Image (cartoon, rainbow, N blue to C red):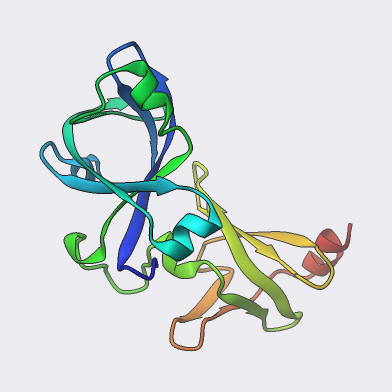
Length: 183
């Protein structure tokens, strides 16, 4: 989570048309997270902006589903040029505006930088990224010492525990998994 209590709910991936419409990849399960009239903050997706807390606020004027995401229009973003300036920027909202999570569910952002420790293999590294697939989200775990990456399905068969207080995720990976990540 962001130091200002903000949670990333999407990312601007492009523009649509001449009127300032934004193509957005949503990280939210529900389109309702991007409600008309809702306030969001946007910031460049770079470390210095995340550290400084630099954000711009916008009001959502309209939202509609689109192929692999959403089309959003922000009040004050009226031209293609205005919209192009926001490509690559993250869209955030305060955590307290999101619904309570069910047991054994987490926001992706909360899982970043957790150390992944397997019952048999020991420390595999930290969670750097997560991406969705048709079946399960995939954790990208990177060992900083060796640079190796492991892709682990976020499924109860593999993920056995999540300890947010100690920033550890426990896994039980199938036999032979260590040979896959050594390649």
